[in-house]
Image 1 (spheres, helix red, strand yellow):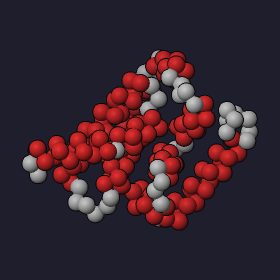
Image 2 (tube, helix red, strand yellow; image 1 turned 30 degrees about the vertical axis):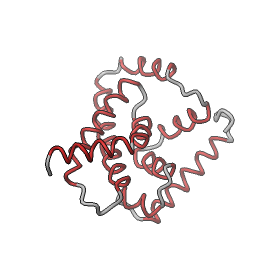
Image 3 (cartoon, one colour; image 1 turned 45 degrees about the horizontal axis):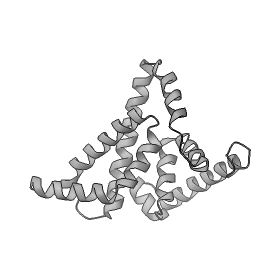
Image 4 (cartoon, one colour; image 1 turned 90 degrees about the horizontal axis):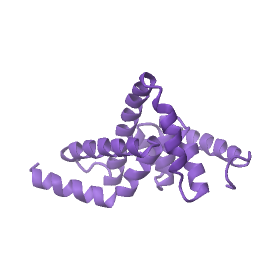
Length: 170
């Protein structure tokens, strides 16, 4: 693939799916600095993936796959890095407090999603973006039934938390 064609496709994907990328970034990175780092990581991986896209799946599915795998890998590396630099934790809490969303329900939802393990977080994001269980399974490499079981458990936990009083009215 020629570089100009790769650039055209990449820019088209970036323009059409920017919201999807930001959703993944916000679910895996919680400070503006980390969000910038993760966004750069995802876009780099997306750029590198353009020549490998064969059209076997929808572009959105491909982009989600690249974004989620990049975010999961980045998250694991950051976790190891943070264990070695504990002083950063206090700064993160301060930054999270100052970057609250204007909508308390949305902020609550993002907070709950951020507490899920990486797979459940990815499943939830795909579901919220309107993917079917089949599409989610294909993207994540698990069966449709397994997707349903995990998502039902997530929904149950979120419902219990939302009626438990710490949900900002959700």
